[in-house]
Image (cartoon, rainbow, N blue to C red; front, side):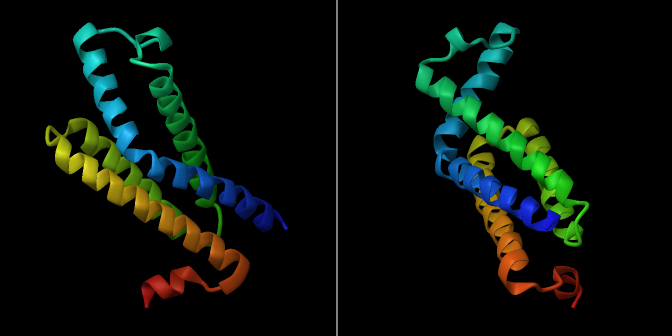
Length: 143
């Protein structure tokens, strides 16, 4: 019962993940601008600093959706599919560190898109497994 509620929230997270995947190109450009603006001015960005209200809305929604995904993944570490959730979280952290430290924006952009797609597929697999397949993912990964 609690697992069903958790994975129903996972469906919402899946929708958020799809939205982030769909808007990734726009968000990537906005994030690049965001960090450049912050670096040049040395201050935090306010709503009026964005180029348009649409850019602000896209960036804000991406940030909120990413936060909800992370919270859902953290709670997923407490489920029986904890290795998959832990792998996603560790890859998320590694990618965030890599993307902020990397000077190769082209590589970062396409790795980020690939990672968003990979994360979407894994979340979809976890949800389908819970409601339909009922397989033990840990034994599948080990064997």
